[in-house]
Image (cartoon, rainbow, N blue to C red; front, side):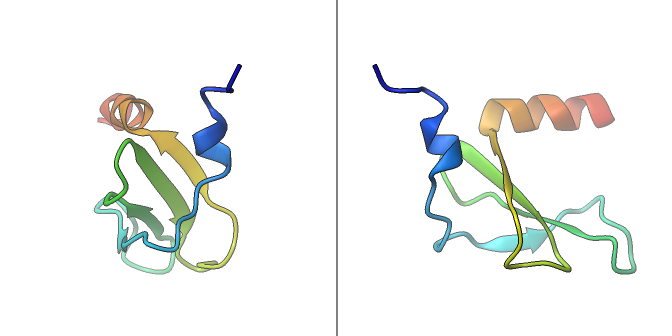
Length: 69
């Protein structure tokens, strides 16, 4: 049986188009997201573009954002 979360862990993000999240601070406290990947929303620290990425399902991202508002 295939792990349904496997695509969250082993996703090639070379085609990701990163943008600064609208809620990021004006200075260097920036979070970038890539919203051009179907069903996934990768998030990274803009100061470390080659560093780790956390990946949410689209549904989980929408839920997360809704709770922030």
